[in-house]
View 1 (tube, rainbow over the protein chains, first blue to last red):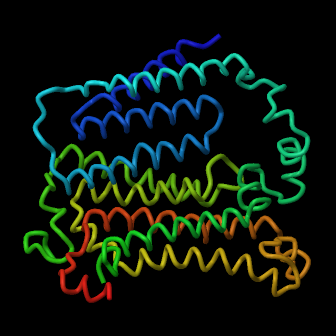
View 2 (cartoon, each protein chain N blue to C red; view 1 turned 90 degrees about the vertical axis):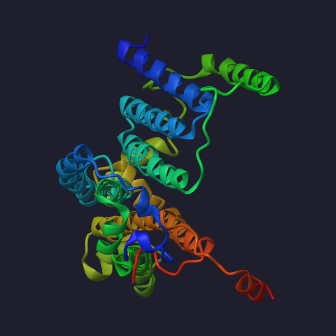
View 3 (spheres, each protein chain N blue to C red; view 1 turned 135 degrees about the vertical axis):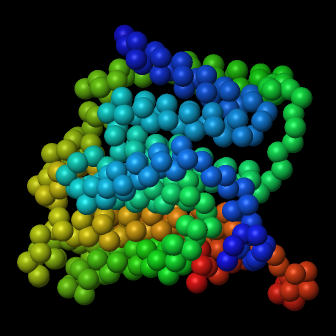
Length: 181
Length: 166
């Protein structure tokens, strides 16, 4: 059974998601999208995933919103007669079909925190990390042990991808410095 | 360089509107956000969060200050060499921590070699790539992307474009 807090949060995330899709004014979309990200961050915190929640709050709600606002400043913002987009009927039909397919799998999901969930009841991966992470790395946060220890090479690749994103932006914008010499 | 002269770094500052409410709010929040980012970065091995989140929050603090006090003054304050040192230095530090075990006869990022050859606990290897590697890269690239997008694309003359294509 879901708590009142979960129900309110769910309604908030759903409302902001639909508003992001339907609003016509881009500035309004950016603001509502930031609210959606904040709602999702609360959701992740509630589902005991604080690492994901922090990332969603900092990157999703914070940095992405500012980058989108900067992009908006660089473009024009037309005066609109209507507040909401008129939904495309064929797109709605496709969306409805996809929603039904995804919703039909919901009943098969394990309960939140269930000990029988495949992601948890998994001796080769999850249970191995939980049992051996501290002995192997002497790091208390198992997520850090996996990211920096067991999957350190992958993390190196990801860090280089982030670095490459910065360099690629320099190239695309024909610039040689990030800020000033 | 001020934004008014329309120099090569664009006119992002022209849309800046000074707001007492935003400036006071950011002035109060920024030290706490920055400290929290540092805490996540340095304490990622013992509590939730870690270098990616810490670096992102540190980067977001700079964005917050730029948002409140104007992009152009903040751009003057954060030098290009700082951003480059963070991003490139992070990749270099991560690679070095990974390569030293190879010199000691092990594999890439094999922290156990630090323990057996140099007497350094393996967990300091993990913390080194978290603190000196991932966090500076993320913070540097977030700040760099923000100022780059604020400045916009450098105008490239048509003749230059044609000659570079040939």
